[in-house]
Amino acid sequence: EFEHRLVNGLQLIVSLLSLQSRAATTPEAAEQLTIASQRVSALGRVHRRLHLLDHQVRVEFKEYLQNLCEDLSGLLIRDGSGYVMSVEGARVEIPTTMAIPLGFIVNELVTNSAKYADGHVTIRIDASSPTERSLSVIDDGPGLPPGFKPGDSKGLGMKIVLSLVKQIGGELHILPGDNGRGTRFTVTF
Figure 1 (cartoon, helix red, strand yellow):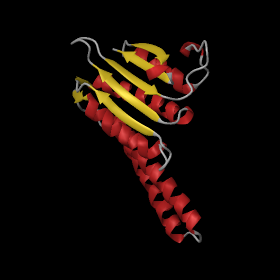
Figure 2: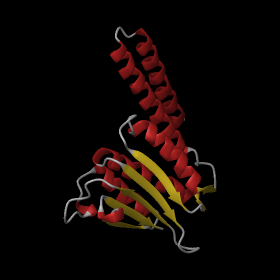
Figure 3: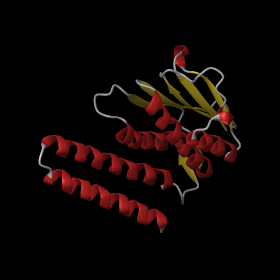
Figure 4: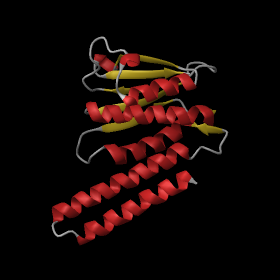
């Protein structure tokens, strides 16, 4: 019931922003209200996507991530910014009990990448063996400060990621990104 009310509330905000954009007195104000409306709408889609699996037992994870990242792109990426998000790797079916926390992890890591990195963010799924999988979020941003320890981070996002990794019995590995640029967060599970 709470989820339903939240989604309805977000849709109401989208409708109000759309009405305001039509009534705006300047083109600039109308454009900004339209952008705000689109972002709230994308936020609603991301929220819905993260909870879409609540009643499923298994999910094709790459497709789920592609849809999630499309919604995140609409929320986080401005047109003409040069920021690109892509999902690569194996098509794997995983239990929903793993997919939902992994979706939240991707949400946090992609949001951080959008905040601190310009350019390209890759979400990669690897199925190196029948029993072990990995999920990486790789950006080509400035990288993390020397000596960065996720457990010492004061940021809420990193605390959420660490908690979710622990919840699924996974491990978090943080390395430099591709070609030594940016950062690679990899969750093995």
